Length: 271
Image (cartoon, rainbow, N blue to C red; front, side):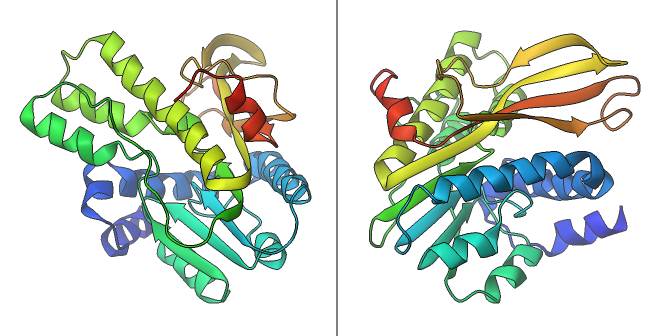
């Protein structure tokens, strides 16, 4: 607990990220990974394989973007830096460990950014008592176009902390309004990735399952109603074996990866 407290107090964090709980979430994720490193190892290896196969579909050189780079647990950073002239790591904040690792790689750029574009308008709406925003857009990123973009286990997570803030500050918000807000975030994310790079890929958890002694007791969809096609790669992630999150049950994610988001978004309704 002391390590987590020190990390929380000393990590540089933009006000918006602190307000919505991203700093606390990052610290908790790092602590969970340290406890569950062995259980997570197959998932981490699968993420690396997916990324390595995805970048082989792209010509070397140019710029690459990693959205949701986080603690770089799932990102083979040195593989990316060897393939591209510049790698831009994008997240709400970057830990000191990530900053030190990036500092040793001259072609890595760190960018603190809300890739959904929803948080500032949501904060304003919650402060004023207005309805949840509907017209937000992901932000542009300066510089030459990206040759490759990757969303790293981010899609399913985008609405979670914002909706927790809605529950705290505006608990009477209708479910339909919450779902429309979440759907706008995730679909906008796919369209943004497809627009920002010549080639874009994504991996995300598709559903979450609770298991008791190996038997599935509950399954919950994780992609907020997006009609995604079958993934190009899939694997299981034992994210929280008992008693990590529940004394008797294990939590497992099904993860899917898509190598070509342009093909995925072409089958979705317009953004």
